[in-house]
Image (tube, rainbow, N blue to C red; front, side):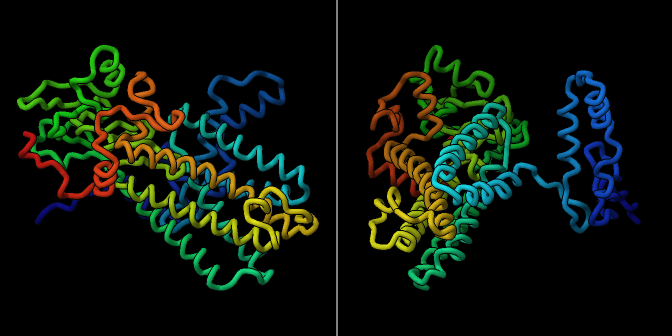
Length: 427
């Protein structure tokens, strides 16, 4: 008889955890009721604060880590940790919008300050290169709350029909379905594409290079790169390998320890290499790459249609007899009633968000038309190469541009198995 394998100690403990127990950051068993117990850093902080003594370095960071580790929700087979970045949008957004509905000046201050605060938090997290669920939770909760206000404040006034509500609901559902597709694999490079295990030395490896010899990290022709351009692109993340027969130049990522195909890039936030990396989108908390770029464009398009349609229905209800654009800027008497004021404030919030998403969609459409990714455009700007088009909104390095129609056909067929290069044609 075969001897029974012993289960790991951690797995055995997880099986016996009740809904209020969990394994803390030190691996010890703990309970939700003890959330304020056994915190030496917090005790020391309070003691030093009462005695007016300075805090030791790193004390606040350790308290923050302990708090985030103990902030959990009861769940079968162990308490689940809750990301603290999920809470600010859920709590602050309704509060700010209800305060803004009290007076026009309050609405002006809050509607202007909200985008500023969001941009400040974006640059703060972007500089630290950390992942956060703040923007994803803000987007999803904004959608849900705007839809709730529409049903509770606008529909009961009797000017919106059932068919219009059904169309708006269908648009919202389709957008969420497309968003679920975007959240899947953006095209992470893994070992399964490799026939030579010697080149797979990391967790997510790949030994394929482009059949056209375009093995650079930014999608540029390797032969066209020289001097400082090559050094800046490969510094810290990739380096060119030996040139194989046929002009194929392999590209090695020192972070993931794998060989990447052309136009692939390493995301410093996700910590993985992605095929045809466009950018890391904080609104979906994921990369946009070869496998989900088309779904990402679909999400933006459906969001714009749904948002504009919802804004027009709301303005037609609370500002009767006025055109939609005119009612957005001039709707007398709207703050005389709190329900109309709340709806009008939500309309302005939606209009600001829609404008930002519309700008992102415009940039994406221009990049697709010239067959350039956002990452390649940023590198071209940094290297001062390529043509700037449409007042600098688009950059054309001229490396993959094969004409408007051909570029769009290539984009619409991204990830198609028929277009994937075979390993035999490369090796």
